[in-house]
Length: 192
Image (cartoon, rainbow, N blue to C red; front, side, top):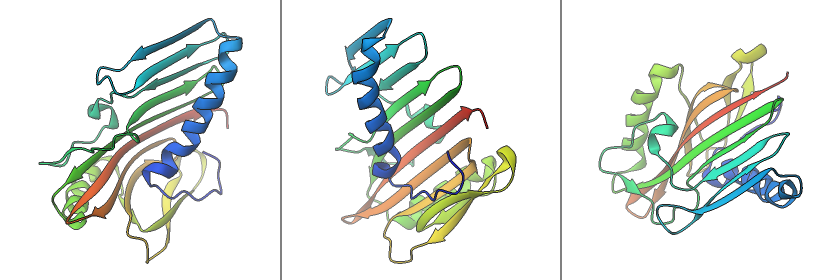
């Protein structure tokens, strides 16, 4: 991700650029594609798409295996009724690559309990940053660490650990008497 840009991690802000990029690539790449494969997902509610060209590939899977987020599911939580934000997206070429795995869940528990659970789970990956606001990365080379720019009025809370190239994110917000939360894994590679 480009240095100097602040990120606010809600599911829509995480997946919006990837959805747009996938839509554009889905239109442009078939013109030069070696292979385009569209299959109905196991759930029957969405389709999976894979496009391979001589210069790169795009893969979008809608039946997400939560293990790919590299985070456990909060005990007692269930997949969100509105799972449009759950996806496993891979875009890559010889020069760059990005992988985003996102899964959305709901729970009857308050956001604070979910946040406490994930703070403990995520600490094995490094320092955990809690943020109500935007996240930016500061530091040198590939060791950039997340830094929060607070927006205290925000109901959404993000937990983030890792570096700019490999992140684990939990975004939690209140929903009725319980909570809605997303588990996200982001991995990037490219020439610096």
